[in-house]
Image (cartoon, rainbow over all chains, first blue to last red; front, top):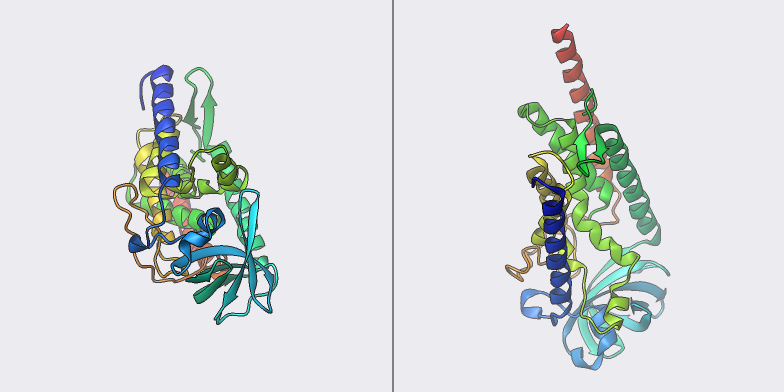
Length: 160
Length: 165
């Protein structure tokens, strides 16, 4: 811990700038299949022609089961893709991740498909909220905010 | 990413067991470990501020660096600036590493994990694909293990109090 609030604030600002630089840097990277960074939904939405014939890994929501069609999204943009060769049978609204070859700009020949049922997605977010509340409860019992030092201190007592 | 509850329960179990072994690790350190275990999932901020909107402003952008070892250690160090405890950084950092360990075992469609060492290396290790982030059984196992550890911890605490009287 650094001695003064000003010093600590300077560290926070420098590290936040570093973090944002990393966000921009990673966002500027092109897909690189050699290191298993395959084109994803946002790449296909930006330029679907560019990746035809290449292996892609995309996640999306099932909008039709026969034929299997998924909707991929990026920001406000969405696109629908046909999935062929899937050995799983997802239900409508399930989330799927597909790895396969982009045969044409609208079709992926799947070599692997992972199905995440809609209800499991709901479960995942519900238990994550439970986890967050548990941590907040423990923080309130074990720490106190020292307004003068602008820092969290251990709360003395059996819970600390 | 495994669900957040599984990560937090693993951190609780790990921290509690470490507190048995090392006197310097107290209950509030277990909480710091649990906080660390959530940090890589700060990428979920994308559910609130979609990176697509930021890219729409003409800036290449991705939250993924938060889900790398370097990114989560940077966030751990930022948090450390607001916690008056000399063990805060190593403990919050260890929590973040436990998150990466669990997530590197997740099932991925490509068979490979994620570039957790980026920007030092773009290498994504192959994943054994033990579970999905939406599977329920990892949390059930973690709840069972944590309950056992919690009961042992209470028993130890009671016996220490009895000895102290």
